[in-house]
Amino acid sequence: MAPALLELQNYQVAFSAGQESYPALREISFAVRDREALGIVGESGCGKSLTALSVMGLLPKGAAVSGGEARLNGKILNGLTPEDWRSVRGKQVAMIFQDPMTALNPLIPVGRQIAEAASTHLPVSKREAKNLALDMMRKVGLSRTEHLYREYPHQLSGGMRQRIMIAMAMICKPQLLIADEPTTALDVTIQAQILDLLREMKENAGAAMMFISHDLGVIREICDRVIVMYAGYIVEEAPVKELLDRPLHPYTIGLLKSIPDIGQRGAPLYTIPGRVPSLAERKGGCPFAGRCAHAEPECATRLPALERRAAHHRVRCHLYADKEASR
Ligand code: SF4
Image (cartoon, rainbow, N blue to C red; front, top):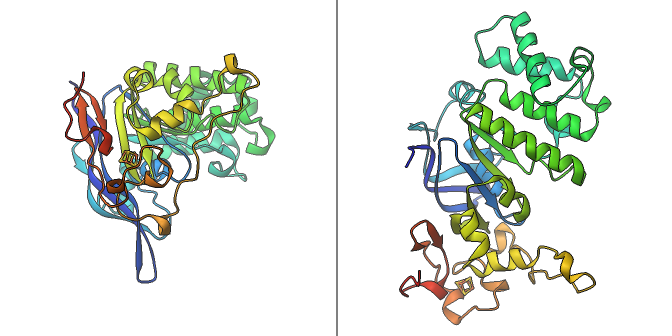
């Protein structure tokens, strides 16, 4: 097995407000290996984006790492200075955000933003940075690049802006590319083009990818392995085919049941009852207990461990605890 490029061990992040601390990521342990595409799924508020932002050293105000360790290329990320982070971002890890309008600077032409990403992280002149930017714009499928280079974000379509974001992320050839819901804000046809582009960029650049989505259909398209997160915990992890064909955790099963089936046209759509608890509402026990049809009394008080049920399949649920793996 390839060595881990990114490794999180019992990683915890908490928000603080006054004297109170609210854990948002708990007991997070996983690895991303060279050239691997790891998917992270779950509803909004489950900790997917917070995990990504933490790996980028971009935790929001009020949030801090409260335990465990994150390593990139063996280097511990906890406690890096802003200067240290500048040497990690760009060349080692880069991120594509969900909404390019909030990630791109509205006052700077898009080409210059890509060139600045190159000149910040690579030993290149301004002229070389511009040529690299133009070349990368062509690689992400943009045409009339000399003209586009001078355009501002609001002058481009949503799909073009997302291609600019991908060019910015890829210009320094990062070892790990984090894509946080990169197609959610796009039309279905543009979504397919952007997914194809991401797959192509990953193959050509030989990068690893962390792909965050609430859409298991998209995850099936692009990922090798999947982590399912719920209320700040990893509740299941497996190779993508295994997870989609033989899900174990009731939450994963609910997510899969929620995918609309064209063969069931006219039938009511399934939704998981209830909602993800807010940080203040989270108590001990299984985080999914309030919404789970299989909950037993112990589920409300005892947190299940994330246990291995098959070679590469882990699940956090009392239904499977202390039973022989059946496969
Ligand atoms: Fe449901 Fe209990 Fe399993 Fe949690 S531990 S998912 S509440 S059965």
